Image (tube, rainbow, N blue to C red; front, side, top):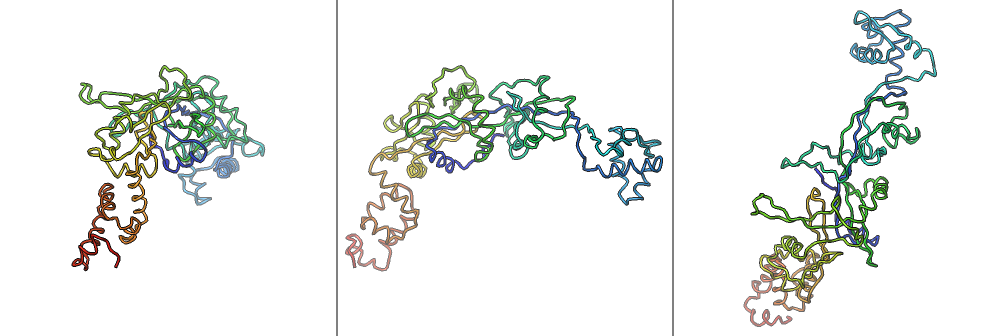
Length: 443
């Protein structure tokens, strides 16, 4: 399942510091070739010393019983059986009567020639770019491995997750050369053994690696569209930079659309969601980020804040972003989620979040203050974050308790409202209520 690991607010601020105001984050699945190969390698094995002991003992004894090797060393017989099977595969020994080890000519060469290069047949996995067939870096075998998606993977609803955005190029005869051509001193960076000599046979299957495309604007009004690996905080920038160059033309065309679909196939449950236009016929309008109807954006934004209605004066949608102006009228719209609205006003932004499988993970909304009333609610909400006392609150608002009560009710801070009422009306000086509390005279 696609699940990006990213602190969204930290990422937004980090991008903003680089003059990149994020407007949306689209998603694609990049094709990866997983190669299962039969390899021929020359390398020193972990069991080299034990194997030389076995061949040497068999040569000096003109054949040796496996149990005798165990008696000589104290090592369990099963270890010698395991190595004997490997040495038989490599044609270094034969085993007569199922228990007597006899060295072969190649085994004696292995034993006596100090420059002998031991050839080993192994089965290895390699990960390649599904488009260019270039070997991928070791990151994809370690941290990135957890984010690879196989073609049979399904979500919790049983829907297939695998959905490559780019048609992969099937492997050809030159594929093994792409692996073997990596210089020996660089192979460790690609999870390729330094002693790899040949690939005699291979099979493959296609996987995908989820990537994000960040669409943003600069202060000067330039649009940026670029790949970022959001599986971690800029996890694999080097590979992403290569993919950016490889697919620059397609990335430049990407836009955020809104797709309408019927969940029940009978026209009774119509839903809408953001999608990107990757792979769809499109013209190149490189500066445009959004290509969406106002009414459909209205529906998604209304749902975000439980608003029954948003006027066109409060919601602006254009090619470059979505802006929500919060004024008193919008704030008191029926069923409005006031806490969510105020939190968005304080941050001056919010985002609509979707499953990455839709092709769009995040769409950001610029939230601006529309009037003095909402500005007052924001200031009070920020003040309450410092946990002031009731006395400090009254002092801050020049003892205008009616205004404080109205704003506390508006932002639904009933905890402070209760404490304020207790302070004003239920303390020991209740007998002087009319004189001191309604007039709020200083004592």
